[in-house]
Length: 326
Image (cartoon, rainbow, N blue to C red; front, top):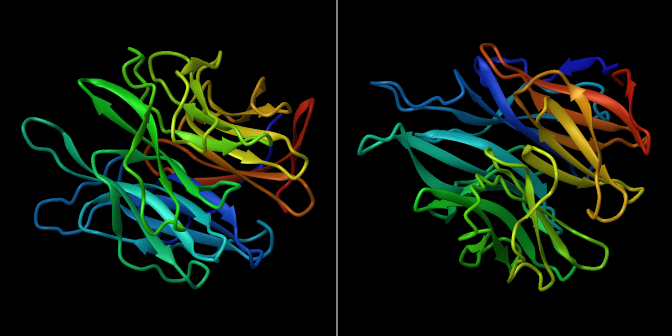
């Protein structure tokens, strides 16, 4: 049995197609969700127009019971897409995304790399976009490390084979390292959508998508400066999104078989599930723990008229318990 869902992306700013959501709880208690808004899965500027897909947000001030109308986070001249959100220790909010332009030399699209926009007023207004790593793409939020650094999962392609990677910031996301590859040269196509979590012993654990094989993972024991080989995790999954609950359980939301979550109780060594969140394939699910200990899963529905949904579940060792909307 699945939980009853809410649609949380209704409003003219969100256009007619919404996808790729991510959400986090802010220090003031609000839940802020960012997502892609366009007219289709890719929304390149049409002839005579300047604007393509945009980044939008919705906000809940009551722990997911109700949501604001969509507001624009960033709307540049290209197809700006796949936003993810985090709040830094100093209160700044940082949204990561990448952009697509009309392709050249026979390509359908050309990418412009990974970008960020920041807010210092709890996500009500955002500044100008900043390019942080050309030729790499992003589908994860910035993650904080115990030593005060920040790390961001990225992915790219070399000689026709995709691989994962990370960049590291030692100065609160004001500057970033050169990309550090993960899985490059292994002969595995990792169109990775890399996400990272730090385990209790300090080890970093990275999840990496493969469209052709099972999801893979890699580990680092030096705060992301070097990585192990990528290893088959044992099940398929796209767009991993990792979140630790107050109990210590680690959720990894992902697409495939439908919209799913796998759960680890031993610091990513083994995974229970996957457990079904929803029977839609669009997915790109993320999660936020609510004040009562239940979990709000946020995902999208692929196809014409797609929307952002939220569904509430209890999470335990026996899987998911559907719960009504707040």
